[in-house]
Image (cartoon, rainbow, N blue to C red):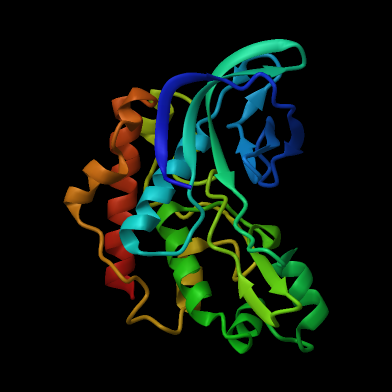
Length: 271
């Protein structure tokens, strides 16, 4: 799927949404839907939804921003499209930006969460990081930990990392990185919130690999010399934040970029 923003309003009122409670302790509900278009399965997500106020969050915008960031850095990940859409929930119509991605499994692959796979296959006392290293996934995990620090991902639980297996072809791999909505300034709902947000604060995060601190998890990284194929430059703001100012205020767009670039620079200095 090509990463892009579709600003022309689309009629997606035919989609039916299921309620997924936030796993990070935030209020509200995250809604998901699916469709099959030309034989390809598509997954739709809404930002934080409130039954009274409608869509109040901007997690879907974060997905596109992080998608672009990982493309610049050369990290394997799921691509998203951000779509201006009319939707229907419980008989009421809303207009919002939602994100959509395509199925990343290849034919013949099945998936399971990393935490379930770890529980079934780890040695006694083996940490999730050491287990992944034994499986040959250390490079993946090192990059993921660094990325999660840069974007302050609050929600890298064990189901947000998937193991893909093809029994017939005897292949086993981790999925491309996905699900980065609960990151950056997702907890800020107003410009005042964004202005007050400390971009370097080490907020409590839910991580399957490591602990509750994205900063402290950097110490787990063993391969510190080749984390990213590419570097991040100040001029990349134009790529990563392109057209986001049509959706979020300048206060948000500037603060989000400042956060990404400052934390990227600290990761470089730390590692």
